[in-house]
Amino acid sequence: MVLSRRVSVVGAIVLVAAAVGTLLARWLSGGGERASLTVTVAGRSTHVAEGTTLAAAAARFGLHARTGDVLDVNGKVLRAGAVPGRFLVDGRPASLAMRLRSGDRITVVDGHDRREPLVRRIVRVSGGMTSDPQFTVSRTPGEQVMVSGALSHELVSMRFRPSGPARMEKAVALTFDDGPSPRYTPRILATLTKLRVRATFFVIGYLAEQNPDLVRRELQLGMTVGNHSYNHPEVPPFAQLPPQLLNDEIALSEQVLARLGAQPRLFRPPGGSTSPQLVRAAAALGQRVVLWSVDPADWRPGSSAKAITKRVLSAVRPGSIVILHDGGGNRTATLTALPAIVRGIRHRGLQLVALTAEPHRPQHATGKP
Ligand code: ZN
Image 1 (tube, helix red, strand yellow):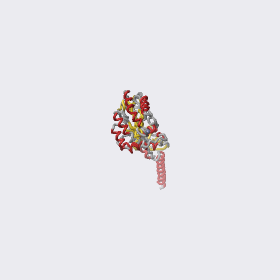
Image 2 (image 1 turned 135 degrees about the horizontal axis):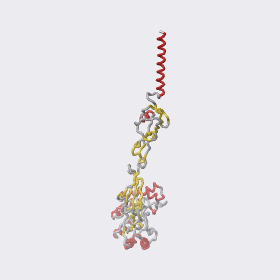
Image 3 (image 1 turned 90 degrees about the vertical axis):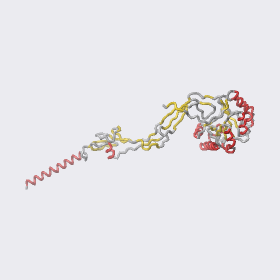
Image 4 (image 1 turned 180 degrees about the vertical axis):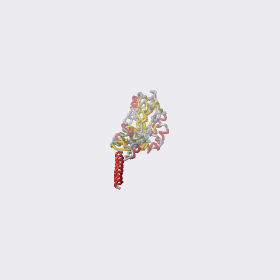
């Protein structure tokens, strides 16, 4: 009895010691059944069981890499979530299936929004480019450098790169402002037709609205009809008008002319008042700014037909744009001067042309650096 009791006490002590030893071993191994590794997760040192994969560690520690979007050149989302985030191990991209080793350092890198790549195209402008603002009948040879988004194809910038000086055409353009006038425009049109001259009329929107048949007649006779604003405001100078008013003046007149069948692509600001902002505003409305190089001041009271003719003929050369008026006052002198002006210009071997509205868009690509 006594012996057997001793045996059982010893047995119990051995069993307890064995159990404590197992627990101690488990505790030392981090509670798991396998040995543990020390790794650094997002800057904090911690333990994971041996054999843990990157994916399992990410799940256990709630690691999440945000995705970024691909944006177009204007910042609009083109492809949401297309830029994935990543986990790095020791600063290097790693597969989610990789098993971690002791000392590994896991970092999370979010995907950042990324702008679409840009492509640059160089396009030769065949025949050359008309200047804007345009002062003469000329073309400048060169090429258009166009930068756009590779995915959206949105235009970022377009810059003309001249390859030589402007080439004047052997031509002169007569332009008539401030009409249509029921009193003078029909007579000026009759004279031009008789002389077989095509010219350009920069008409005022509200007058075109009042005299639609005169605008239609100009078009029928092959004249170019341009936009000279709706109200012809002159004070303050046109280019200094508040942007909204300036836009309205151009756009309103364009609408009137479009209703009459004209597609005005040329804009002459009242008083020839221009600025880079004005040129941009007109371009945004699809219009090129046209000024002039010869002003015989036919608008000045007391200008005789003889004086007007003399001033034109002493100043014209290849490429001249001449400003005359078919409205805005007594235009008898201008009308009387026309035949002599036309003869004098032709006598120099120069053609009389209407300005062309064609925008001289690039024709074909020559390279893609
Ligand atoms: Zn005017």
